[in-house]
Length: 274
Image (cartoon, rainbow, N blue to C red; front, side, top):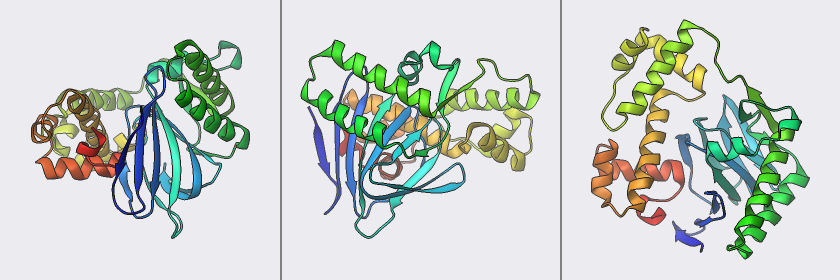
């Protein structure tokens, strides 16, 4: 069942479950701009109308109608209209385990998959994405068919636009120290963190820490912290926890701060999302 939330005149967001934990988001924005943020999952999307303008990996992209947008977990990006008419798009959110399970061993991919570019032009796959979205929404109870279709599409997408990484990172002391920082943030994101604190964990200077972390994980520390907080907030929101309590538990300064960061990353307020 799809749920819609009207934000302001001309802005509309709808969420719906598809299959295998995949969530569909369909949105139209005329005046909303996404702040710099990241997600803990993979995002596959197609621009349906207008120009979806965003920055990712230091480059600006203009996704036009029929273009595909691909975001890896923890990859920071923003988003806004590229023309006065706004833009419309649809996305799937897929967890990492599901996407990894879609790998075709004969396609030459192995290890942990990721998308090589955030913006690609592939009309056939874009049309397939749109058709499959409608098909899955139309037959929500045919679980086997849905899983087969999803795995086949994602596997094809990875074969065309995915790359592989080694299962084990190189034995670089710098990489190891930054992995410690990442694990530290995962363990302590629910409280206030400082650059000095993270720099001490890594054994780096404060000036070097942010730059090194961003280069290693394609997202700065503060954006990564916010993504973890929002992911945890979604779990608590589903469980019915009051908004003010969610804000406090997840490490936001107050409910207003929580609402701003959530809407800046997701496109709707926490209450509307729930």
